[in-house]
Image 1 (cartoon, rainbow, N blue to C red):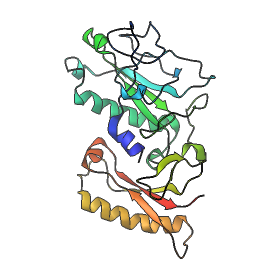
Image 2 (image 1 turned 135 degrees about the vertical axis):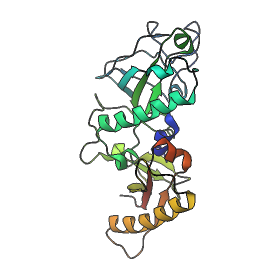
Image 3 (image 1 turned 180 degrees about the vertical axis):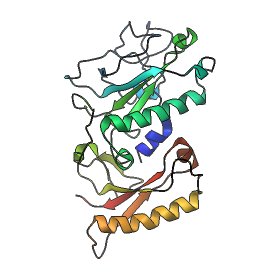
Image 4 (image 1 turned 45 degrees about the vertical axis):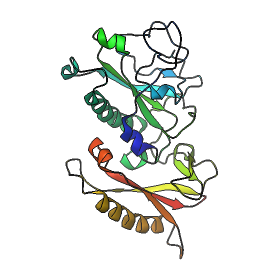
Length: 267
């Protein structure tokens, strides 16, 4: 699935090659003042980012008014703790810090609980300084909410602000469904579009301090719970189909404690 991933793959961030703009590509349509910047980015700025941007570690794309069309909004920034002063640019520890920080702040910002976070097409990306800025002593992170997932080929425009966008009962355009014969092979689409599967519920498999119980236990618990949960979600039909997405040790160690249950439904 998209997020538990997203969430779990600790997204790195953006840049497309642009000649003459700093030591490395830092996004399409860059702002010269942001290229190789050592300053902590501003919160509340919006941009038009692409999945290609969100595949890179740094980004200097020009900001746009949040009232205009945009696909990304910066919801958290800050200086990295002093323990990162002497680490390498691509150190795993930097990504782990950003993942935990952005994940927590993302859920708070969009107004989603752990279950909804795994069932929305909206996710986040994080960016660090460019390598040149890093070598100059810059140590900051930037977390952006983006209108898509790691499976998206393009991002959807966001509302003027994504703050609280998933509070209450989220709109179907922000929830994840799948179009295809199976969840695994199907294209992930917003539930406002035609679909055959909906990510309807999740199962919590452990507490933050629990050790990973192993693949077999995770799958067994997930399968049993999803069968019962989806039957109830569909109002106890005589026949029904369900699927599930479970995760492994890497995702568990990154902080994910849930699996996703899918209902076969066009609703």
